[in-house]
Length: 171
Image 1 (tube, rainbow, N blue to C red):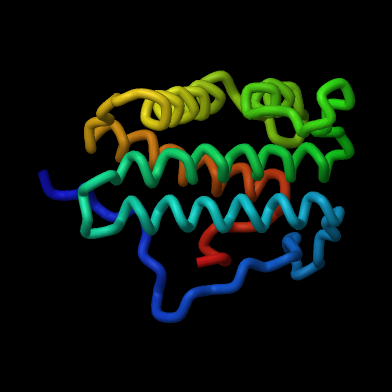
Image 2 (tube, helix red, strand yellow):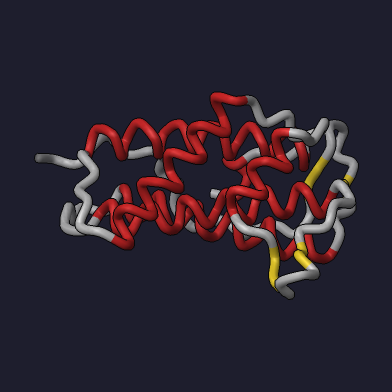
């Protein structure tokens, strides 16, 4: 089957991944160092996911899109949590918290305001990624498009809510 409609197209030259967010009125929002790095990783992974989705090659589309899409949200949620002063490091394990813990923390965060439906979208993407990576699951193109499109919209919403930034500024 032909690939679904592109999620977004980059005009001409590729944009840079900015290290600062901007508030209304042109005032810079100072990011914590860890939040800046995590936000940059989030943007990079989302762009990689959408490039894979928009690729003319059908073969392995879900296998390429889902890991980057899930990673983009894990990094964005961690960036937002760190920017808000929360720790995303588990001292018991010596590692950063996982995706599900990030989603749960984001649901309780007053700035992110991650709703139950938004969390459901992220959990569905995470489950599809797990199935795609660890089993021989096939994700239909229409389902991949539906969740990827919802993810791009949610990513932009969260970027705006937390960092006063728009996804379009990074494309």
